[in-house]
Every structure is written in structure tokens, then in C-alpha cells.
Image (cartoon, rainbow, N blue to C red; front, side, top):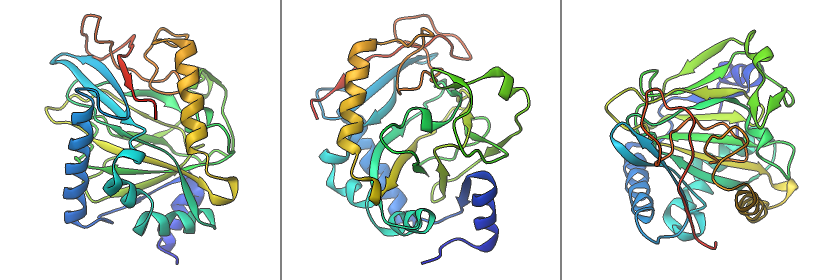
Length: 275
């Protein structure tokens, strides 16, 4: 099944990302929003999953939830079937398997991400494709994603996942504003970044990452390795910033430091289940 128009296929091949406007029905978006709100409630107690927090001008807020697939059958079914499975098979040339899943909430004042490539954090396979599913409108003001204009075929020079300043000086960036119902697919070598949410509304995005089925089902291996690395590193990376990823690229503030705008020098409070 070929789901991309010729123009969309050209963008994918040239830039490593593609926007599919209004690919989801409004009822699907409503269901996803309800399920994400259920997962957010888990972060307030001893619920399952891995949850990260940040300090904003409005107080501590949830920044990210991940590793929720085994605990929420409804959202798991969405992540593993339907249009996502069809699109990924088209882009990869074979069926895909889920590698990892996360929700970035980005409440007002929530931090962005330094320019990075996901591939530097996604071990165990040499290529991945992610799908971004917006539950709220993401604009320049609210901290939408920006993608570099040119496709990359490998890892760029970086320090703990942050792309080197030398490369950034010549990079050209494009904001990708989205509304609920849109889908954005991007490969793990596509450089991207985002800014602080300076609006009065949240910017909740689901990010689902996949690898080709021929590489194997690596999801449990990924989370087992991530837990081990987090336990060894503690709450801060080499830069002193929060660790929400193997990459040291998050720009949110820690909950135990004074607020500032824009966020800088972040850390995290982490709650995880054994799964």
C-alpha cells in the first residue's frame, strides 16, 4: 500500500520527515487524549510506566511518560496497527515493530530540546522511524518541532547527543506546526529541536518509534538498557542537565531549582515501575 502522494514521497526522500495532514479521525484523537490523560494520572501516584518531571514558572509539571505499552491495551492496539502499521511498512519496505513509546506533555513553560538526532540514543538497530501524534496544536509559540532542511544519512558530530556547534552554524531549520489529527513521520537521523512552550496551553505530543521487523523485537532490550544507564548516571547527565533520554538534550528545569525563562540547566524527578 502506497499512502504518500508523490510530493510527500519527495519530501521524505529529500529531508527525512513528512507531514500527513488530518490523517486521523477526530474520534481517534478524542480517544487518544482520554488515554493519555489516564496515563498522566499514573504519574501522580504509584502507577506503572516511567515518568519525568520539570519545574516551570507555574510549578512542577509532568514532562514525559514512557514505557506504558504493556499497561494500556487500548493505546497499545493503536500503536501497533491501523494507519501507523501501513505507513511504516511503506516507509521501511517491510513490517515494523514498536521500539519505544513516549508522551511529551510540554505544559506552559515546559522546556524544549537542544538540536539532536534520535539515532544517537536508539541503540541495537541502525535505523528507526518515529511517528509524532499531536493531541494539541503545536506552534512556534508553544514549542513545535523544527527539522533541519537537509536529509542526513548518518550520525553528525555530537557531545552526549547534542549536535556540535560547528554543524549548527551552517544548518537551516524549518518549523513544523501541527494540529490534532496530523501525523509526522521522521527517521532517526533527521536533526530536530524544539523551544520552550511560551503559550498558555499544553503541547502534548505522542512519539512512537519503530524498527524494521527483520531487526527483531528490541523494545524490552531498549528499556532494560535505559534503566541500567539511568541507574549508573543518576539524575543528571555530563552537562548537568536532566536525563529523560540516553541523549543529554532536554532543556527543562529541575523541580528543586529556581524557575527561569527560558528553562536551562535541567534535572529530573523520576518514577518508574519494574516493567
